[in-house]
Image 1: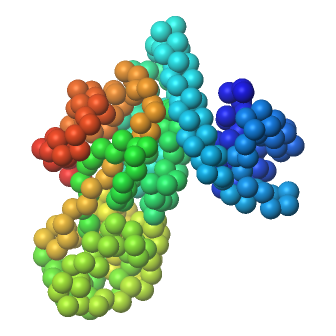
Image 2 (image 1 turned 180 degrees about the vertical axis):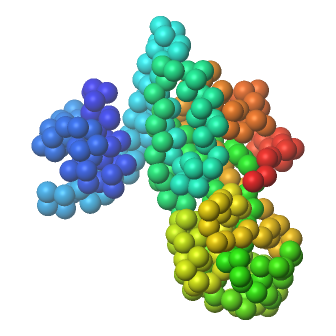
Length: 324
């Protein structure tokens, strides 16, 4: 049994049993992956994958158990490498941030500036992630963090920490009838075509709940996850936009105005997530606290090592989150 064979098993599982995609992810050949999996099955004397013709169609019961142990072994291997690297050169490494356009544009620049100046040898990479992404596909690499503005749900492989609270704001043309309203009502908003986030997203779900409670059924002319697109179509006169206040306030050199909607919609939580298998290094703790000051190294370590879920929730609920 070789570690490389275990990596092949994990890659196949992560790529929905598509050996071709798994081989691409591993920068190797498809025949090579298939051959090694076959050799491992022969060595162990069991079938790890079900087959239909030349394609894999499922994972056997024993295969599921084997892959769980393989993932644990690979995590240990990675931790050993990280420990060694940190010992030999603590100022080098990598940090991959998966996040949305809005977060990358409006919130991350100050943290990136601070981080890259303090750790010039750390490779810092930003990757796009869809706001509707769920926890099943949030990156769980060994140097990966996801910062998302939607609910994550339960995932035993993830550490999920509250990063900040975000609010909804209104953008509309300067000559719009609501432009003079400092505190517009839900009924007033529902009188006009709305442009906002896609149904099911956190920001949209907040709106739907409040409109439903008020007995209103607004008309959404356009739904799209890109706040800049929404602002552009509002400028063109297609309706009024309800988006993240972070993006709504950014209306310089435009014919739009921003109206605060804190009195209508409660704030939502954004989250910073990473795999439980990560061996957090000092520069990683530093990044987390630079982005979310309430998440000090002590707080993060306490949550990571806390086995009592109720106590963890009590600690998290006691944190004072920044509001944007």
